[in-house]
Image (cartoon, rainbow, N blue to C red; front, side, top):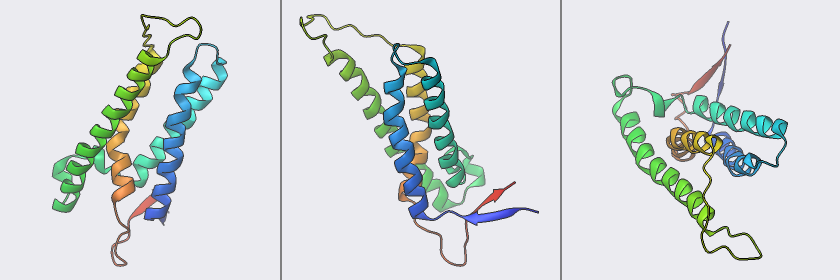
Length: 153
């Protein structure tokens, strides 16, 4: 027996807000001075919120165009366009913040950039999930006759 529940636009936006907050907090725990347990816990929260967000949007950003109707294809294309622009903005912003973070005092004339594997995983995750953010935030509630459900196994 499968239990089903609907996911409203408001619920998806709340998920977006929590996932966005996790995306902002997660890089702060990547610092080498942060305890290893804190990094793993924040990474697990980060990924689990994104997984729930992907499921709540019926995986539209990851499905083949052959399985989508015309409206869903347009929604997916728009989500990729805006989502990747958003993701590139986050990545460029984090790289610029590395360039502008000088040790105080003394001021360093040559900024040092350190890109760790954790940074790369973070950026890759942002790139993969950015279209889902756009879908979750912009897709309206379904009409009363069309109920979108998430099966609970």
